[in-house]
Amino acid sequence: MYYIQGADHQEYGPVSVEQIRQWIAEDRLNGVSLCRAMDQEAWRILSDFPDFTEALGSKIGTTRSEARVTPEGVPGSVSVASTYFIQGADQKQYGPVSGELLRQWIGEGRLNRSSQCKAEGSLEWKTLGNFPEFSAVLGSGLEKSSAFASAPVALDASAQVRPPAIGIIVTGAVGGLLSLAGLVMQLLGVNQDQKLPPGLPVEWEKGLQAYMEFVDKFGVAANILVLVLSLVTVFAGVRMLQLRSYGWVLTGIFLAMIPCLSGCCCLGIPLGIWALVVINRPAIKASFD
Image (cartoon, rainbow, N blue to C red; front, side):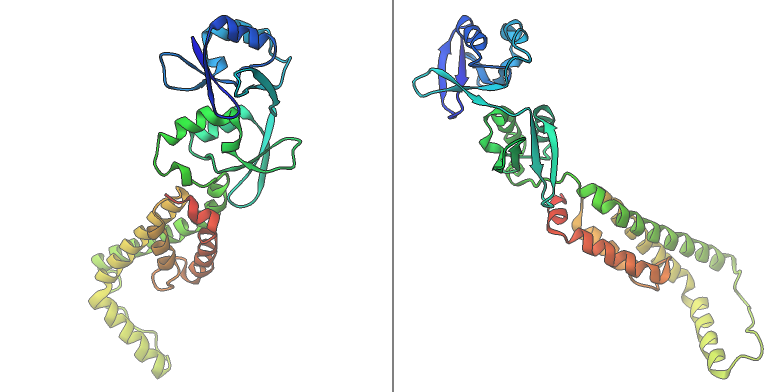
């Protein structure tokens, strides 16, 4: 014995296997109709039940109707689209995509019952929760995470952050390599006892002499500091690619924009501004874990 869930989200039954097979033959139920066995609590689509495989197989391609049960318990029929359009958190439209692909995205947490969707051929946008054909998988998705109901649609967030994130990684990597090279040279004493070229203006000579004295005293510590900060920048770029650790990403971006700490010198400034603009877009910011 089984129960059927109607398009009004009411439960009807129990009904026998024979009765359900008859309704399938009459096009009152189909493979995406919601059903559960009498001794189970989980709702599944009808095609998941081996008892109805043969009956549904004979109806493949002959109907695009979804099960609907009236309050009197008499199945009726409503139209179900074969493909759908999804509106992303960036307000862009994606599709058409199949119902099976939408169920996969729901299972991955990329869509939820508040995601905007419309059936192909329709002008009306509705939330996924208003499409009975996705009720079963939306229900199972809500059990996975308490934050799932507010999870944003982020179909292309990764694609948008990838270019600036790679720029931040390159900036940090170049800075790290230069600081590592400088540290090795300091430890080996390569720059010691260097003479200034003759004929320099007095002001230049004083400035360069002061810089060389600073490097002799603090060069090792300065290179270690820049190396550590460069590693932080690389880490932030990687987390940006992964859409995680928003605070770390911000820190790394700001470090990349400091000329004296950035291996790419002033190139880190436009790369950092680009990255800040991207991650502060509402849809992208909402996609970070």
